[in-house]
Structures are given as C-alpha cells and as structure tokens.
Length: 445
Image (cartoon, rainbow, N blue to C red; front, top):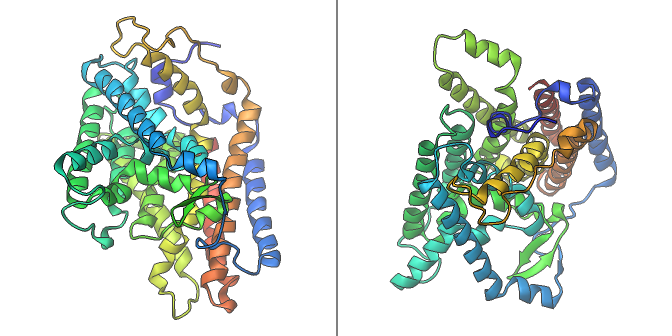
C-alpha cells in the first residue's frame, strides 16, 4: 500500500468515500434505524421506573484505588506531564518549520482534538487533569496568594457553557473551514488566543471559568461521563456509563455545546460530498463563506432539532418546558462519541502514528529525541475495509441506542405519567433523523 501523506490525511478526516465501505449504505441505515426503534419498544415495555440517581448510583471504589486516584502525587504527575507536552509541542510551534511535517499540527488536530475522546472514556476527565491552562492558573494563584480555585468575581451562572460553545465553534471553524488551517501562523495564533483567554478568565472567575469555558475541558468532561469513573461526596465511585451520564449537570449553553460537537462532525462529512463540492465550485465567491454558513447551519440545526423535539411534550408544574432541552442534552453525548469513532477512527489511528513519529523531530532537523523517528505506520485498518465499515456502523448505532436509553430514563423521571411514552416520540423521531442523516453523510462523503 502506498504511504499515506500528511496532507492527504489532514484534508480527509472521514471515511474516504463509499468505495472504501463494502456494506450497502441502505442496509447499514435500515439496520441502525431498526436497532433504534426496537430499543425504544423494549424500553417502553420493560423500563417503567427511573434507575439512575446521582445521589445514590455507583459503588465505592476500593480504598487503595481511591487513595491512588485522589493522591497529590498522581495529580502532580498529571500536571507535570501536561506541562512537558505543552512546552515540547509549543517549542515545535514557535521554532519548527511551517510545514505539515511539524508535529504541532498532528498534536493539535489529532492527538488533542480526537484523542480526547478515547482518553476521557478510559480515564475520566483527562484534560482537566493535564490542562496547561489550569496548571498555570493554579501556579499564579499560589504565587499571588489567592486561594486555589478562586477569582476576583463569581462566575455568572447564566453564562453556563456558552463560552465553551463559542470556543468549540471557533476551533472547528479553524479546522474545517479556514483555508489556511494547516499554516503555522493561524493555528499558532488560535492556540495563543485560547491560552490568553483562559488565563484572563481564570484570573477573573477562578477555575470555575475553566470548567465552564475551556472548550477542551468541557468536551473532555462531557465524554468522561461515559466512563466508569465518578465522584460522590468527594469519594471515588464506579458507575455504569449510563448512570454516570445521568450526572451531567444541565447548565445554560449545554444544548449549544452538543450542537457544535455533533453538527461539526456531520458538516465534516458533508463538505466532502459531491453535491456540496459542485455547489461551492459553481459559486462566484470564496469557499470560506458557504462553508461557514453550512457549519453554522449544521450546528444550529442540531441544537434546534433537539430543542423542538424535547419541548414537544407535556410537562409537570415542577419542570418548566424551557428547561427540557438542557435536561435531555446529555442523551446526545453518546451519539457524538459514536460519530467521532465512525468519522475519525482511521484518521486518529493512522495520522496519530505519523504524529508520534514526527514528534521525535520537532524542528525537522533529523533528530530522534523520543526514539520514535524510525517507526513505521501500521495501515491495518485501511487494509480491512469490511471490519472498518462494520465498526463504524456499529459505533453510530450503539451511540444512538445508548442515547435513547439515557433519554428514556430521564423522561420517566421528569414527565407526567400520561406523557412518559408519547412525550418521547418527537425525540425518537429526531434520533432516527440523526441516524439516517449521519450514516448517509458518512457513506456519501
């Protein structure tokens, strides 16, 4: 098989086209929709009472494991690791060549953005533990004598996750729309602006700002809700992913966050489709404008569909209808993870390996600092398209099924008895639409 070039991988995040997938798209879509409908039917019959409660779910972790995970030594090790990676990759960004062989690009767009998902699924809120912005904020607090975690002002509750949603949108716009995203200057400028905003925000509002406004920390912490690691009254507990997902706090802007995460993944497939390419080529304007409009449409569209579907039901006097979208937004998180796996699996595995090789020579001088320069990229996934196709379709289907379960449990907890099933139908229709549209785009890209 011919070697994969860095430029080829960066410009083609997804599946590479239907020719690489030996499964008929109609069969894949029909199977995924059937799994969704059957799951809902089974839940309607067998799942009559809510099973998840953040105050009681999960069992305490073994004492030795709690001590290890909660230890200062492990926390310091995570901070040191994060800072070393930040300084090492930062040196490549500042002093390295403006070329795709610069490992800053692979670290930024692959190991950080896509790698957050498996790291958070396996380890919990991974980025929070290694975040250089959080580490530097803590160091400044120590030097200045400010109590750790505090800022000059209280973080406004009404802002919620809105700053994170804007940060996430700016990142996906840079990666997917901006035509010079693989030029060192713009990517470096975005990273510098991100760090500057995080430093100023944490100085003003403490680490609460990072937990609500840092796009990477919010993304990682949401995905971590599908891990088995949780906390209850400060103690480490082991929960099922569904029980952990139920502990997502519905704050303002949560719908916008999941809209950007899900919508941008769909747009990444759509922008490579033949119909879109023909349309933008026929327009007498720079592609950045229609692509920007399409990215906004996808992101807002997901948020709008979720909002309408969740509000189209009866509510009790204790639950305002306007609160429903944020209360059900957690059910979209497994769908996002399923599409990230389906869309970026080969991109992460293959270009991730290439990035590890490039990291050994950050300044493109022929060095081998990490001992990885002579490694060879393993293209096993690309060489087994049937396995790859089945894995991706199953990831999408499983993500939607888990989302339906999470939404069902929340519905029977919140909705009046007469609306507990019928009230879920609009959301089920929305999820079927997401399944059909998402798989169609994955196969058609």
